[in-house]
Length: 476
Ligand SMILES: *[C@@H]1O[C@H](CO)[C@@H](O)[C@H](O)[C@H]1NC(C)=O
Ligand SMILES: *[C@@H]1O[C@H](CO)[C@@H](O)[C@H](O)[C@H]1NC(C)=O
Ligand SMILES: *[C@@H]1O[C@H](CO)[C@@H](O)[C@H](O)[C@H]1NC(C)=O
Ligand SMILES: *[C@@H]1O[C@H](CO)[C@@H](O)[C@H](O)[C@H]1NC(C)=O
Ligand SMILES: *[C@@H]1O[C@H](CO)[C@@H](O)[C@H](O)[C@H]1NC(C)=O
Ligand SMILES: *[C@@H]1O[C@H](CO)[C@@H](O)[C@H](O)[C@H]1NC(C)=O
Ligand SMILES: *[C@@H]1O[C@H](CO)[C@@H](O)[C@H](O)[C@H]1NC(C)=O
Ligand SMILES: *[C@@H]1O[C@H](CO)[C@@H](O)[C@H](O)[C@H]1NC(C)=O
Image (cartoon, rainbow, N blue to C red; front, side):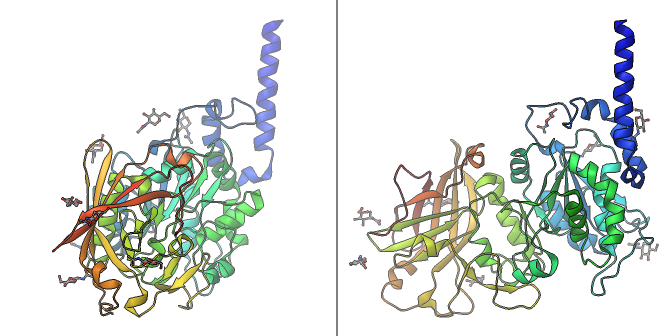
C-alpha cells in the first residue's frame, strides 16, 4: 500500500514535471537545454519551486563560467587584456570564436580555451550601423549553458577587451542567491549611449552576470528574441530584450565599467564609487591610464596593486593637513591628488572631466557628475601616480606614488603651491580590507597625514584606516 502510494506520488510528480516543463512551447526552442536540465534535475529541482539544494557554501571562482566574445582576427591584439585576469585551471570558461584558428596557429596556454560559435546566418540582423557578430555573441550564453558543465552558478559574459577583477567579481556575486534569477551589470557612462541603447540593460563590454536559473529561462527564448530584436545594435541589447520578456530587471552594481568614454580616463578612474572594482573595458579607446606607460603596462600597474588588496583598488580616502592647509585625495593603487587648500569632500569625490562622451565626443552628460579640469595649473591639484606597492607584513601594504609632471602645463608659481611641489612622493600605508568589508554598509575609509620626510626627494606619508566614530571630512 505504502509502496504503491510512493510509486503514484513519484509518477505524478514526474508527470507534473514533464508537463510543467515540456508542455510549453518555449521549450521547443532549446531541446538540448531540456536534456541538460533533466540530467541535473535531481540536483536542481529537488526543492520544488527553488532551484538547487539550499547550500551554505559560499560562491567562489569555480562557480563562474565565463563566456568571452572573441574573433580569430582580433584575438592576438586583444588577448593581453584577457590574460591579465585569466588564471588557467582556476577560472572556467571559453573564448568564443567566429572560426577555427588556422592549423599553424598554436593556441596560447595563457589564454582561455576556445570554442567555435555555431553558424548564425539563419538569424535576422537589421541594424544598419552594426555588425552581425552581435547575433553570435548574444548566443554565447546559450552555447555555454548547453555545455551542461557541473556546479555553474553564474554565467558571466564579457568582451575580449574586458578586464575582470575576478576576486571582486566573485565577492559581488556571492552577495546574491544564485538560486534566484539575477541579471547583474552596469550601464554606459555616456547618457547618449543609454538613451540610444537603453538604461535597462547591462552593457556587455563591462560584463554582466546571469544566474543559472535565469540562464535556464533565457536560453529557451533567446533565439526568438534575436529575430524579434533584429534591429538592435548589440548582443547585450538582444539579451536584454529577452530579459524584458522574462520580466527580470538589471541589478546594477557600480563596479562594472563599460568605459564608454573618449580621451583620458583619469578623472573617471580617480573617482571610483564606494564599491569594489569589478571590470574595465575599452582600454584601447582611451589614453593610457598612467602617463608615460603604454596602455597595457598601465593596467598591469593597477593590477599589481589589485593583487595586494583587491577590495581596496581605486578606493577613495580624503584627508586634510590643517597645519599646511592641504587636502589629499587618495585613489588607492592608482593616483593621489594634493590640493594646497581645503577642498570639500563633496568636490573631491566628483570626477574630473578629462574625457568626452563615447559617440558624439561632447562634454557630457554622463551618468555621474563631473567637474572641469582647468588648464590653469593653479586650479589643478598636484597629481601623483602609483609607483609600486609592497606588502609589509601583518596584513599591511605600503604603496608609493610619484609626482607626475603634466606635458600640457607649467608649474603654478602661486605661493601656496611652492612648498607642496617639494614633495615628490607619497607613501600610503593601509591594512588589506577585511574579507567581509564589502558585505557591510558601504562607507569610504578615512586617512590621516603623518609626518613625512622633508628635503630632496621628500615624501608625504599617509595612513588609511577605518573612520572613527563621529569622524567626518569636514574643514574647520
Ligand atoms: C546526461 O547524462 C548522461 C549520463 O550521465 C550523459 O551521457 C549525457 O551526455 C548527458 N547529457 C547532457 C546533455 O549533458
Ligand atoms: C568552491 O566551492 C566548492 C563547493 O561548492 C568547493 O568544492 C571548492 O573547493 C571551492 N573552490 C575554491 C577554489 O575555493
Ligand atoms: C592545467 O591542468 C592541466 C590538466 O590537469 C595540466 O596539464 C596543465 O599543465 C595545467 N596548466 C596550468 C597552467 O596549471
Ligand atoms: C598559417 O597558414 C596560413 C594558411 O593556412 C597562412 O596564410 C599563414 O601565413 C600561416 N602562418 C604562419 C605563421 O605560418
Ligand atoms: C589656513 O587657512 C586658514 C583659513 O583660510 C587661514 O586662516 C590660515 O592662516 C591658513 N594656514 C596656513 C598655514 O596657511
Ligand atoms: C615608500 O614606499 C616604498 C614602497 O612602495 C618603499 O620602498 C620606500 O622605502 C618607502 N619610503 C619610505 C621613506 O618609507
Ligand atoms: C615621462 O618620462 C620623462 C622621461 O623619462 C620624464 O621626464 C617625465 O617627467 C615623465 N612624465 C610623467 C608624467 O611621469
Ligand atoms: C612634524 O610635525 C610637527 C608638528 O606636528 C612639525 O613641527 C614638524 O615640522 C613636522 N616635521 C616634518 C618633517 O614635517
